[in-house]
Length: 276
Image (tube, rainbow, N blue to C red; front, side, top):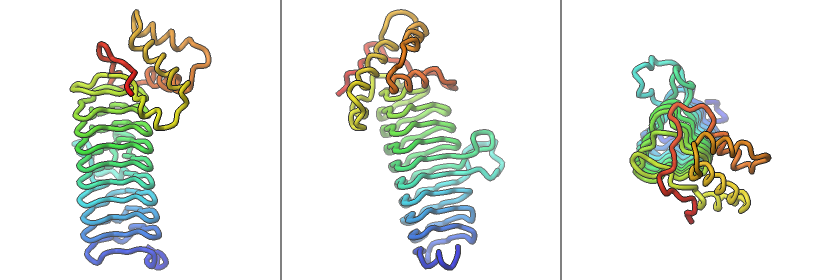
């Protein structure tokens, strides 16, 4: 840390900041925090107290980390042998009490990422090689296995459990106490143990200001894909054959046909997309 930077940061005398750590302007390091030598904190990052930031970790501008959270610690993977893998937290993200975010692994992507403007509520666990998009909200006590992907703006309800390699599409919503063992389509809603697709996250779509026409097109596509007659593959092919689909429909179909480790959560019998 340069002398110029030192004049711009506030480090409590009870904190331990290792030589080599890079602290941006306006950083606040509260009491009993530990910051490792390979950590980079962006401008105006706040570590409130009793936090541990370790490993090759970058935290973006304006992020806040609450007490007893740990970021960048070694993954819970028996194959990990101390490789210099990474952790990245986006700007303005809020990490609440007792959250654990583990660094990536050499056998995975090598990095665990949490996007910008996210909220990770208390006691969330983000495992190695997970990738969370921007604006993701994860409620209390959610646990993720390794390699989970969560799209922008998704909401994960409290005490949900996400199986390793699961993909959660953009704008999707996972109900509380759900066990998610397969992929969730963009804008979908799932709930239950094991989770089943219950409809579209129409409330979330409206809150994001998406056009009514696009929401209506997505609803028609949802009904055709998950509620129509015949085999799923035939229904999918019929939707893919429609020229110039709405962008939301195209996004959902691209997600469905993309390679997947876990397969796709299907709609429960009687599932409806008319949730208001």
